Length: 514
Image (cartoon, rainbow, N blue to C red):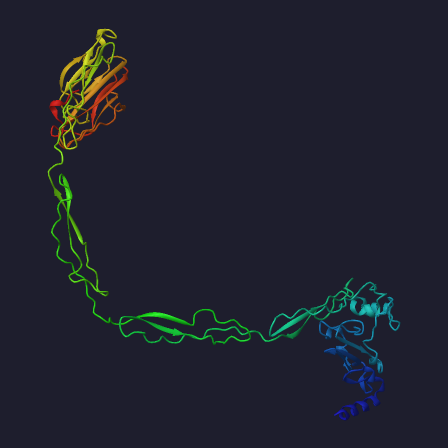
């Protein structure tokens, strides 16, 4: 094959010698100085070239002809630089071209001098004028560093590798790491950073890891342990998925599990039933009210272990009545006390006398005294003012108006005509202190609510003077009183306000007095 290629080319070069150049031509060799083969390249279209690349830790060389269009850094990968010195820089590729005979033996050989000097074989000023070589900093720094002002540019270089870390595992296979820094020297003034990995890893092998045990699947449930009544079923599992080995942990938990199984009863259930009731016991007391008891037992029949107990209570009670332990003692009033002094020192007032239900006092079975424990009467003194301003009245009998005012229709006396039996209003003739009392009785089983109130004639503005009185008795008549002293201005009104429309079926009319 080589003969077929080179013979026509040699003839062509013999005819047109001025258009060919001779270049060293070898592929993938370890030392470029050992290359002795040459080839004829087309002058003006091809140049001599040298490619340096790295495989593992070894540099390899390829030498030969190269089309001029590929003799440019633009034709290379972004990470390779034409003309880099592999002896002084940690870059793994170099590609340079030249256009004289056998010139590619000394390409890519730019050791950086200790002093900043330009390549003597180049006219840096002319190259920069024609091709602006200073713009390509990383080529200019090895050819025209002084002319291009790149003497302070420093490319980064790796420092020595650090020590290996400990293995990442304590058993089986793991990794170790070591690292290095781009600090020998660090890049500065636009110099290149280090190329290549900053971290290196390698495999490390330890002793085999322990095997921890794991449970296998549960077995199916066994048959019931009994043929009747209640028994147990069992399922098991083994610590074999995997079995613990090399000091591994055993399985955690139980190797067996149980559940209850229930089959038909070995004997038939017997449900309980009540016996007949016993006779009633004697009364728990000999007088007044007590209790009697009767009982029964769940023995007709008695339930067995599988049967239900009897439903319901085993005891029953009833009330028994005997003669009272003591006789009832009904209350009776004591004699009236003497009349008190008059409630005022001038004009009309009230005197009061009282009695107690202690003659005798009723016991728990007796009735309380019937009637009121207090009684009032009007007393007359010297007039406080001129006789024309004396006002006192006494009236009774039930007459509840539609506005719930009780207008007592029967007037015993009406001194000063201040009381109006049609409206039930008392009108103060002058400014002063007035005293009022109301006394109402109810029939057995009834109650009554009433109040003393004062206010304007139309009752729009009013003030309650007494609290509600309530009397309830289921067996006898009962009475309630409301009394108060009040300061009135001239033409203020006072009336008795009932809680509702009471009738003579509720109020004991004979004793209604005011």
